[in-house]
Length: 307
Image (tube, rainbow, N blue to C red; front, top):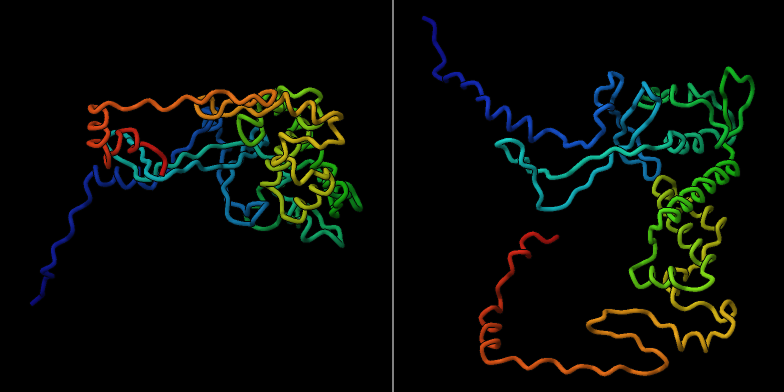
């Protein structure tokens, strides 16, 4: 006599459940439509050139371009997709990246004392898909032996020169687009309005561009670049106080130039004259009662503010 299991077979998951699982496990990726239509478009995971952690990259084999996938994520954000809520409200975007940044750590690690063919250098899984994206490594290394072999040895001076050119080019782009890179509106106003501020202005943009490029570099190269540019350590903090040796008659100038502050609270002091301070308006009994009743409550906008 055969026995049958009393356990009933589980019913197949409904279409709605499957749809919710598919949406919850999906990504929201912002990318150009022509890139998605590319049959040679693929996504791989490689170590980040700065810290070595896993990072995702898009490979466009048709145009020989590489894009880094960056994620914008904030707490308490979700996506509404059709009739489903995706709890992960992060947004992924792609941005172009020079493939030399990806291979630089490996070249510096393995080819400081000896040359290695490019094919051997990029033989690890993931990196082997990057070979077609390189014409040469002359910007960061020296070619050794036959040109067909493509064997390179790391050259630190070449690398620093290449990175310096990148930083200066990026700095000029930021400056041409009039992007304020100082630590606030007050500093930005000062930089824009100060006479003979070309040198200070350039240093601000160089320092900001250096920070952007440094996000893809190891600490050793970041330190060497800082020494190469010889940035002033107090560049940001002392934006409103140029050294006396650089200003000439500084005492007379500082009497006339003061930082602009909040117009409603701190009016600027000009020629040592302090403006009159208005006394706070006295509240009526109704306003006091309304203020007391509203204490401890939250405004609607507070529920949509950042945590």
